Length: 116
Image (tube, rainbow, N blue to C red; front, side, top):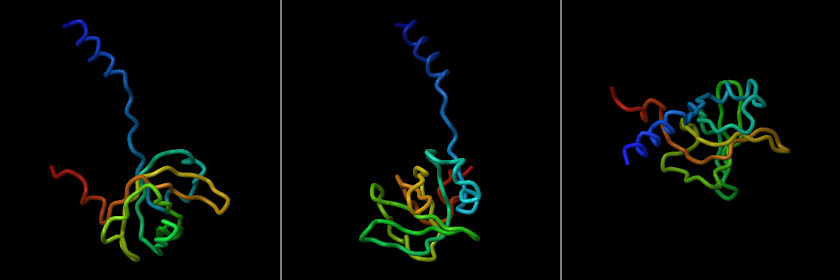
């Protein structure tokens, strides 16, 4: 039993957990091909929301990107001109770049970090 426990713990030490990529819209759109196929967290301001197609447009200071939230819940408070955080996959589509959202949070990113 002890050998199995030690072996299991040793195996866990070799598992690599990738740090989450955390970007603004402008940072992503400066070179979106670099992040194609990557899961990341993206921060920006909601420009518009299309509830029927479950998409929204997120902006930074100089760039925008489409967010597909077909598989994510749009939280209360996710309105135009609000800052949101989107976790999802960066994809290249016929109309340009987009993020397929897995999770959307409203507000400042620091709001979700643990207190020291």
